[in-house]
Length: 132
Image 1 (tube, helix red, strand yellow):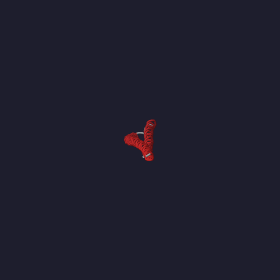
Image 2 (image 1 turned 60 degrees about the horizontal axis):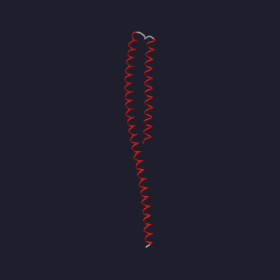
Image 3 (image 1 turned 90 degrees about the vertical axis):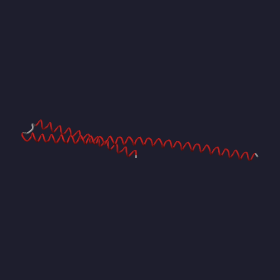
Image 4 (image 1 turned 180 degrees about the vertical axis):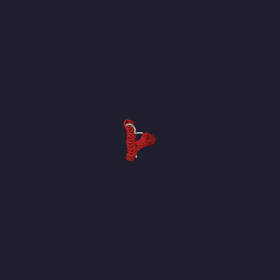
């Protein structure tokens, strides 16, 4: 009878230890799942941010193109005006310099906007690569 009781307790202890191990394994799996869900949520948020920035960048590109087209029209109009005025009489040196300075300023503005857009585009591409 003592031998049977010892065997019973040994079996019970073994089962109890196995149960504890299974509970720990279950907790580990739950923790891994929670980390996975949190990582997925973070990645999803980053993806949404990248897509939003891409839309903003496309809007900036579109606006810059529109501004560039408008400036090109203005430059063409100024050149036509200069040509029209130049046909009858030469522009004064001051007026010519002023017109050239205006054109140079407009070109500088466009160049800075292109550089800014290029930097923003590069940043978006790098962020896309990092989130991929």
